[in-house]
Image (cartoon, rainbow, N blue to C red):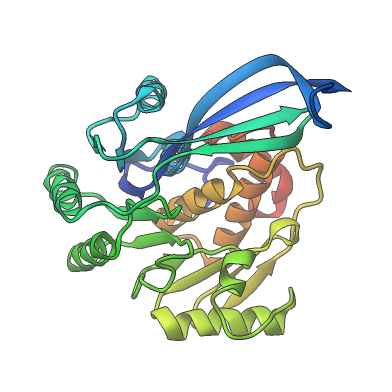
Amino acid sequence: MIVNGNLTEINQVVFVVGDVMLDKYLLGIVNRISPEAPVPVLDVNKKSERPGGAANVALNLFGLQLHTILFSVIGKDDSADALLNYVEKAGLSLEGIIKSSSRRTSQKIRVMSNGQHLLRIDEEDAHSLSSDEEKDFLAHIISLWGKYKPKGIVLQDYNKGVLTPFIIKSLISTAKKMAIPIIVDPKDFHFWDYQGVTIFKPNKKEIQKKIPFLFENNISDLKKVSDYIFDKLDCEISVITLGEDGLWIANRSSCFWIKGIKQEISDVCGAGDAVISSLVWSLFKQVDLETMGNIANAAGAQVCSRSGVVSLELQSFTSYYLNLYTVLNK
C-alpha cells in the first residue's frame, strides 16, 4: 500500500523461526594458476561476514520496520559469537536464540572473484534437534509468545535440523489457535508438513521435485502447480519464485504471473529471503494479491542487484519500488 508516496511502516511483532547461519565471503582477484594443481589462486583483498538463513529474513523484516524476534538453535562456537554479535549490533533481540553443545553453527564460506563464485565451503551440523532440545526450544518460543503476542510467524526452513516435524506441527497449531498468519519458506525434508498455512513460498526448483508432473513458465502450467499446492496443503496463498522470470502468486480465486524485472544481476543470494519478508509486510498491510506480488518481485530484484547477502531497508526499497511501479503511486 502506498500512503503519501511511501510504503508506510507497521508496528507489528513477527516471530521468525528456523535455521540460521553465518555467511562469510572471501573476495579477491585471480590472475594465476597454482603450480601445485590446476586450480586458480585467489589473492584475497577483502573478507566479510553477516548472518544468513532465518537470521537474514529477520534482518529483512527489521529493515522493513517490523518488530522481529528471531528463534533458532545454534552451537557454542566462534561462528555463533560472530553471528550473534552482528544481530545484536543490527538492533535485533537475542532472547529467542538457544545455544547447544551438540551442534556446530552453520557457516557458508563463499570464495569470489570479480563478482563470480569460485567455491563455497560449508561447515555445519544439520542433524535434527533431539527430543529434549525440541521440547526446550518449543517451550522457549511459547514463553515469549505470551510476552510479545506476535501478529505473524515465519517458518524458515533450510534443512539444518531446527524445524522438525514436532516443531512445525506445534507452531502451526499454536498459531491457528491464536488466529495469526503463518508464512512458510519450505525445503526438501519436510516440504508437505505445512498444512493449513497462510502463505507457502517454494521456488521453482523446489516445487518441481515435489510434484508428479513437469511444468513450464506459462499461465496454464503455473496454475496447475498452485492448484496442486492448494489441494495438498489447504493453504491460502501460494507463491512460486521463478528466478529471472519473476514469480507466480495465487489464491483460490485469483492468480498473477509477475514478470521478472530486466536488470543486471549481481548476486542472487538472499533474494528468497527478501521475497518472503516482503510478503509478510504486504500481508500485514492487507494489500491486494497482485500488489503483494509486485512488492515481492521488486524486493527480490533489488537484492539481486547488489553483491553478497544483503537485507531490505524500508526507505531505499520504497524508492526502488516506486521507480518500478509508478502506476501504483497515485
